[in-house]
Structure formats: structure tokens, C-alpha cells
Amino acid sequence: MSDSSIEANYVKSINGTDDIIRDNRPKVTFIGRSNVGKSSLINSLVGKKLARSSSRPGKTVKLDFFLVNKSLFFVDLPGYGYAKRNKDNLEHYRKLIAWYLFRSEVVHKLIVLIIDASIGITDYDRESINLLIDHHLPFVIAANKVDKLKMGERDRSLMAIKAECGDIPVIIYSSVTGEGKGALTNLVLKK
Image (cartoon, rainbow, N blue to C red):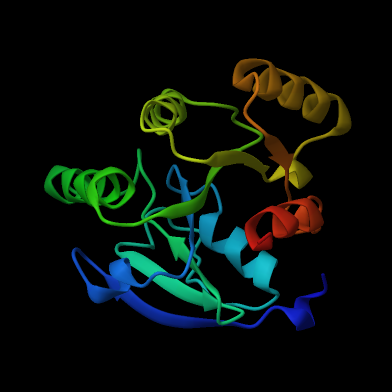
């Protein structure tokens, strides 16, 4: 599927309950630590700058909704873990993410847990994986930023990630080169 066949537009940002939660269109949610490239990955999937991205961790501070092909939403969540924010803000983000994923009325089509392939799976990622499994939510892992790894490092890192993930699907991804874009696009747009 080429970029030109994906229509995507920003709809709104929310900080809690909103009517968009009850919109019955499927929702594909993108989560991950601060600075793993969630917004850049969304932008690469749709082929245009849609989500706000920054080299500074913690740019996304609300739940950002994007309507894709008039049939589903991409939802960009704030990053978890490290971000240059005070403890109250970090706790607010943690609660907002947990509410949206586990207690809101959203029926999740798919959750894309994005990790930094050069760092591997962190304790924060493990906690997210366990919570997604415990709540029986459909998810895949996108190992982003593979373009930053040399071939030997890349093979070792990806083997370690896949070994730890077991049966969880892992998609190797680069927002820079487009590697993995076709595979992830097929998953998130699949009917």
C-alpha cells in the first residue's frame, strides 16, 4: 500500500473522557517509552508529518487522535518512563495511559508497543507487555530505529528482543528507511 493511498488527518487531543472514545471506529494505539519514535513511526506509516515529533522526550502530552482512511483512528499516547517532567506530570501521564488502555470504553483493534531496537526491552516495556497480556489486549511490538544499528549489533539486538518476546509478533522497523513499513501497515489497516 503506497503513502498516497493512506488518508490521515488530525482530529483532536484529549486528556480524559471524550465522545471520541465511544466512536465505534476501530482504534490502533501507539505506546512506548519517551523518545522511542512513536510520533515519527506514525508519520512514516501515513507518509506525512501528522503527529508532533521532537528530539526532546515527552513532546506528546495528551492522547492524540488521527482519522485514517475515514475508517479507523490512530491514537498516539504520551511516552512512559523517562521524560523531563515533574513527578506529578509523570504520574498524570501514567494514569492517563492506564485509564485509556484498561478502563476506558475503547475497543482496541491493535496496540503497537514501540521499543528502541538499539536499547532493547526495558523494565518499563516489560511492565507494559505484562499488563497488555494480563488484560488480553491485542498487540505487536515494533522494534524501531534499526537504522541506527550496525549489522552485527542489529542481529544481536533483534535476536535478544525476539527471544524475550516469545510468541508476541515483533516487527523490525525504521521510520527513516521505511524498513518494516509494509508489514506494519498491513497489520494496522487489515480489516
